[in-house]
Every structure is written in C-alpha cells, then in structure tokens.
Amino acid sequence: MPLHDPTSRTFASDNYAGVLPEVLAAIADANGGHQIAYGEDVYTARLGEVVRQEFGDQAEVFPVFNGTGANVTALTALLPRWGAVVATGSAHIHTDEGGAPERVSGLKLLVVPAEHGKLTPAAAETEAWGWGDEHRPQPLAVSITQSTELGTVYSPAEVKEVADFAHERGMAVHMDGARLWNAAASLGLPFSAFTSEAGVDVLSLGGTKNGLLGAEAIVVLDPARVDGLHFLRKLNMQLASKMRFASAQLLALFEDGLGVRTATHANAMAARLRAGLERIDGVGFSHPTQSNAVFAELDLDAADRVRERYRFYDWDRAKRQVRWMCAFDTTEADVDDFVATVQSALHP
Image 1 (tube, rainbow, N blue to C red):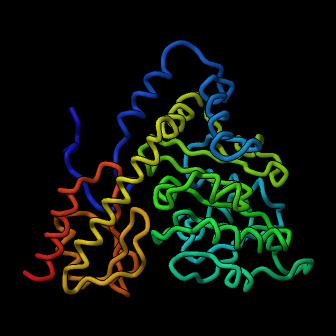
Image 2 (tube, rainbow, N blue to C red):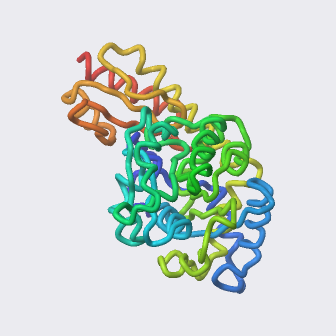
C-alpha cells in the first residue's frame, strides 16, 4: 500500500518523479542468480560497449551513485591537489553540493558570472590566469553544465569554443551532464556531437533526473586527461558492489532511444508551460526555455498562492524569480491546470 498519492505531480523538480517502468523492468531482469561484484558483471561490460558507441572508441564508463559523487570524483581525477576549476556562479558544483568539491577533493572553485548560465571564454579568462604563481590556485580545468542550471543549452559550437580556450591553456574540460538527455533532445543531436567531438574530456552522465533509481556515471572521453579514477571511485565511496543494477538502469535509457524520448517529452511539457504562461499578464521570464525548466518572475504573494496547490521552489526571492520543472511523467493536463492556477492566483 503506497504511503503517498501516486497520481500527485508537482513542478518543483524532475527529481520528484518516480522511476521509469522500463527501468524497473531492467532492474528486475538483472536480478536473479549471481554476477561478479564491483563491475565485473555482464551488464557493466555491455554498458561499456554502448558508451563507446555513443561517445567514441576511447570512452570509458564508471557507474556511480549520484551526481555529486560523479562531479567530485571526475574533477579529482582531472586535477592535482593545487588545481582549481573555473565554473559559472550558478554551477551545481558551486551552489548545490554542500562544498563537496572543495571539502572532499580539496580543489578550488573559481566562479565567474555567466549570462543564462553559460560559461564563455571571455568569462573564463577573468579567472584563468596566474599559472606558475605559487600564491594562486592553478586554474587547470573548466566545468560547464549541459543543460545548464538555468535551463539553457550549449550548442556544439559553444562547447567547442570553451574547450578550445581551455585546451590552448593546458586546461581540461569537465561537463556536468545531470540533464544531458534533455540537452540531446533539445539539440536533436547525438551525444558525441556536443561532448567528445566538441572537446569535452570528462563527463558526468546523469540518469536520476530522467527516471533512474540512483544511478549516474562518469564517462572518460580522453583517458590521457585523468589519473587514478579506479582508485578514486572507491576512495570517494562511489563504488557499488552490486553494480549490475546501476549499469542495467543506464543501459535502459540508451536502449531504443528511451532516454531521449522521455527527455523530449519533459522538454515539450516545459515548452507548453511557457507558452501558456506567456499569455498571462503579470508573468515574466528570466531565461530562455530550452530544456525542461521554466524560470519565471511573478508577484511573491501570487507565487505563494500557487504553492498552496503545487509545490515548487523560489530561485531568487529578492528578484521574484521561481523555477518550474517538468519531468518524464508530466502530462498536458498537469501543465494546463498549473497555468490555470497561476492565472487564478494573479487575477482572482
């Protein structure tokens, strides 16, 4: 007997959504009998084959438990102890990981402002300096997020521009792909087009926000850039003993285009939400809607009235900014009812 209403959906986060039925089936299919632990199983081996098909022949995959673990472990493998990472001020590694990159890894984050959450060479250059200066943490990597924390999407050309800037200065490139499937759906391109082919060295591949049950991965795109990842995954408490179940989930997203289909739906629901809200007087927008997030501006009292029916988060209350997220299970009826609720809250 469930302890919650299984028909209830909100616009707070795609993390609120459950697990895709196909993923639950994949977990069940991987169950039964014995498989070698710690990644020597047939599901993890198959995942490695699929990742090489999707990202290039050099790609190596390391399943982990969560996005913070993926980001911290990947960045640790990229940098020496004195290394620093240039990232945007809105980057998840800076704002939402409890200081884990700096506390656990010991690296330094050098944050820069970025319009609509996108790092540019010009912004990166404000912190990418001081190599050889023993008084300054050495900027040896950049980190970008695809899609960004503000719901925008980098084009392959934009990724390559940042990667070229970094590589010309001896810096590595990390991509936080917590919502990589939404970016792929938005761009209509294969993963390789805006990762390995655009110059990304290491990728944190998300899954939980697209219907997985606590499964993410680090994908190494340029093995020459990383060091000790096999050891660091264990050291950072991200090595699963029964890894077959994490790998089976990730495989499910790749099979028959499931991950892109579900992300395409989430994106489409966000586009429908944006279109409906644009017709309401009193609703403004902070950022383009290019994936499954809508960032809006409205009267705070009205926002609180909407929250009586639908849970969601303030993004910047001082600026009257809120964030509304769609997920793989958001329906058109959900969107239309939410739009009607906003209309009623603003114009009783």
